Amino acid sequence: MTDLHKSRPARHDAPTVSIIVVSYNTREMTLECLRSVYAETQTPFELIVVDNASSDGSAEAIAAEFPSARLLAEQDNHGFAKANNIAAQCATGEFILLLNPDTVVLDGAIDKLVRFAEAKPDARIWGGKTLYGDRELNPASCWGRMTLWSVTSQLLGFTSIFRQSSLFNPEGYGGWDRGTEREVDIVSGCFFLIKRSFWNELGGFDLSYVMYGEEADLCLRARRLGARPRVTPVSQIVHYAGASETVRSDKMVRLLKAKVLLARRHFPAWQKSVALALLRLYPLSRYLGTKVLGRSSASATWGEIWERRGEWWNGWPELQNSGNR
Image (cartoon, rainbow, N blue to C red; front, side):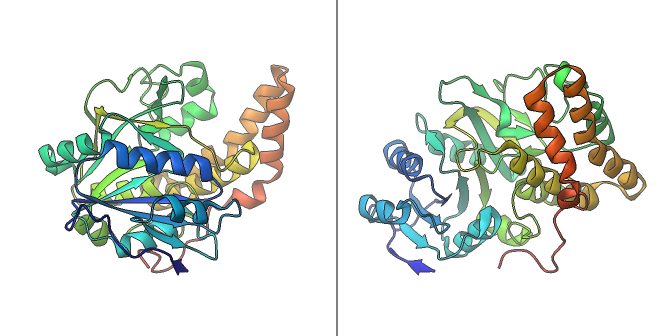
């Protein structure tokens, strides 16, 4: 690891919030994100950027344009969870804000989110509203936990057919336009605020989750300690989403590995075997369904995912003592 800048922003001696950005081969988007942080944030902050061994010159560009940021230029790609854990160990703010590199802060969004947290301290984890680049709603700022009903709905195709239904799409909070403040099960790691003391109490992200599922696991563990995560529509960012991963089959394999591990970790014992069976059959159901409908491209993708079931069938391997280290 090369710590290129150990200084904090000169204008703030005691940061309220430590903003953590983890980048990997998203140079231009990362630079746009960091520009928006400085342009739109008045709350005292420090900026910690972890570059996961990018090959596109990200680290050099960040160092040149943002000398007041603390840049950790890594020699290895640690993935999302470990990179955030590394950065959090350097944080000094009262709050930690996880911010994806493919985001743009809009209209004082970080200031508004910190004020929201101060007004709703019992939530203990806070998030905002995310938009796509065209400013249409990106609903992935938060979602509901997996249940037997939610995975059944996905297996039977109800979630896709009735996407706007809160009954058939409970994980996606179907029908809710994110225009109101609300308690949620899981706040997305793309715009995720937590008190540093609570992050440390939770041990940060569990490193068993190599990619995807990290924030879901952390939020579910937090709920067991009394947290009630909340989101506000007032604090808005653009989240382009998926900028560093474009192959759908690879993404779904990783997502399924995370979901299987989440099911093993967080479903009640009496539901676990059924939940795992439903999850494992989901790609097969999608393959057969798209084949019957004549959707050759989608069918080929889901067929590949099913053929690769040996990669995701048992989920990510569980690591011992895999927290904040």
